[in-house]
Image (cartoon, rainbow, N blue to C red; front, top):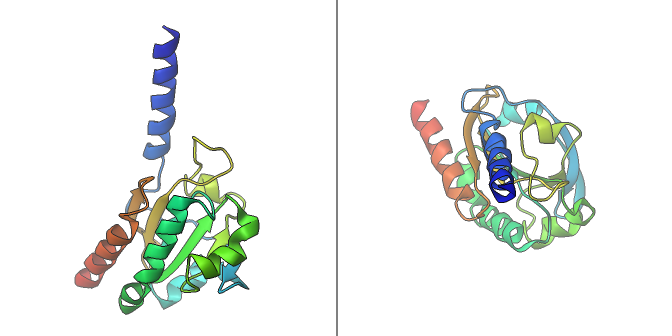
Length: 176
């Protein structure tokens, strides 16, 4: 009986997080964050960035963890494709934020900035990692220039986030 209750509680916790994600068509909450690109301090404001084109916002659990290293490297390797589609890529995390300057050069190859999550963003973007409090779940959002969510993709495996993001951006380009 206790196992059944625990299993049901775990399933509810995981499913409720998935159901609470921002949905395609919803407005992306504006935010301002501080972080690093190429080891240098940078800041970012979503509403200002959207004036230049769509934004690919990927949340990752923590700097210097194997999945996050792979995900960042994958985005860095594909940065030319994102730029060709007029999109800016940024990464945001709540984990190991004291190591972001080094992470921005080593695993992001200085190709895009990474930021420490701002107050309220975990709730605004529904990216609290239930399995590890204080870290962010691996969720990617593509946000169009009108500040609408064009893609929500949550998967702890780091390997499909780039492909999913590029597909959404290509679909947006066709619709224009």
